[in-house]
Length: 284
Image (cartoon, rainbow, N blue to C red):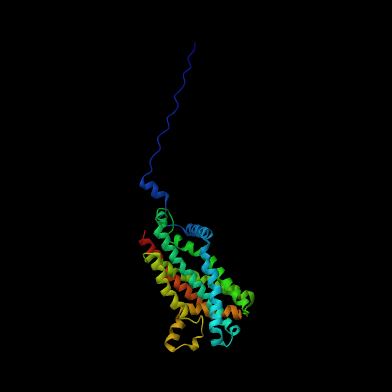
């Protein structure tokens, strides 16, 4: 009888625990631009899925364009322009900007609701750029702005409006409206990070929205306004957007008003985007 001796199996060394220096060496203090864009688009996809599960979020951008276009055209058209058909080239671009501003007001309300539900408490534990949870839903809202703008033009055409700029002018006007809506949404995002409840966000947003929309040239010509009101209307960012939209839709021309409208949008983003991110960081 023979005995066969075998060598014992080598014992694996226990895994070395990572130190704080090891973890710091594998991470970066800031997200790169590519990572920030990827995280923002992920948040946009999340917001889009929320829209699919809550289709009532589309009520304001589907019903309001139909209601506002018909209501203001028939109420003010005869008194201001002599007929509804003559008033449509003036009011349709105005309703376009007004509807986009009303739609972007919901951005701050939804942000505050997510913060109250604790959703952002989970985000702060992730290696995510702080701007991503704010900018992502706003990118998803571009779909809502596009729907509202398209329905506004569709309603106007059904009522007799014929845009002189043709299809190209209408498309450029819709794109400008989407850019304007995205830029103005930063104002309401900032309000959403400051207010304590969704109800207060809605109330504050209404106080911001009404002066911006109704104290502009969206519904009436500036020449018909008193001097003190016309001075405010001329510096109102919404007036720049409305005038630029009229130039694109009615004439198909990229005028200086379009450039000033883009400058106004860039100024709003430059002011309120940092304010929103800093206010959001203080809540983390």
